[in-house]
Length: 454
Image (cartoon, rainbow, N blue to C red; front, side):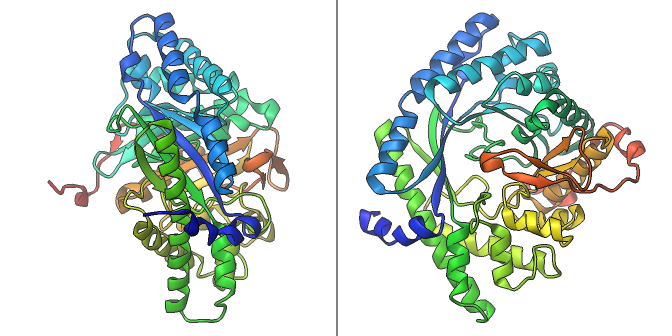
């Protein structure tokens, strides 16, 4: 049983160490909205989301005031729109009309983002999947709060290389279509391998078809809390280090569990999961990279970084699963470059490269996240980067992702300012050797041998 006394224990974390509930995400199934008439489909989508989410923001603010817990974002995730729009949408422009409907209702109910402008194509693409993917640049350049994701691979099915090639082109087109905003559209677009159905974090949130009609998922975050705790055991051995991380993750997750249960009760929506990911912000002292430095590295990216991140990720999960019966989503440590001041400092110092970040993704929660690269990077090069990350997820039976931003008109040595939680980032160099012939082969990379477990 969770009570207010457990929350009181975390006051120091909230006031001085940047502990917050990063998001309450309301998942909404749109399967019952499917219609062959686009106008009726849009009306049904708007009505269903509005009715389900009209009290979400108010409820989050009430919980935040009553318990003294910052709740940074209130968000919505919906069933992948490629599934919902297939019967009505005959063109990419038709799908973009649905994106505008999602944006309008997100504005109306006051949420920060709405995720689920998505397609799941790990084994192949339907006509609707392909149309939705082709519509992404238009959708993200004509909306403000819509987020898009595409699942390109899985351990069970392998990697859809046709979709990987297409997404390299779509990332470039999205960058071009939003170049007046420093290619900001790409910050709202992520590609996955092994995407989870219950992820509350953007840009990758969608409401999986295995979920109930509505669900509340909560994402907590506390890199500053973990760093402060570790500063008190500086120089101690790994056993002490691991125990400290576990105990801290337990307390952080209990806060998320309390908020999730309260939101569930007040909204009359079942509680889904707590995602206990350490999600950094640009705020000083709220950095995963700083935790790695506290563990003993001069900068994130120094030798030992991958081992330190593996340790951190594992202990966070171990502490979290003891605090909640329903830990899900991604849960671990995020390493987005632009959103983490410590990561930005490491890149600026030359300690952290794209290749080292790729190695780190083998042991953390997500993948290559919020990385700004030169705007003239070829689409096939972006596809090659995506393929590498999909392979890491496929072979290691874990979720991996790529959210990469080719900033049109900028190159290495420059930086880009996105603002807010998205932060700012130096433009990182990309390997210039060609992978064109590899990307252009077409077809699928088969699932690994260890996928056959039936």
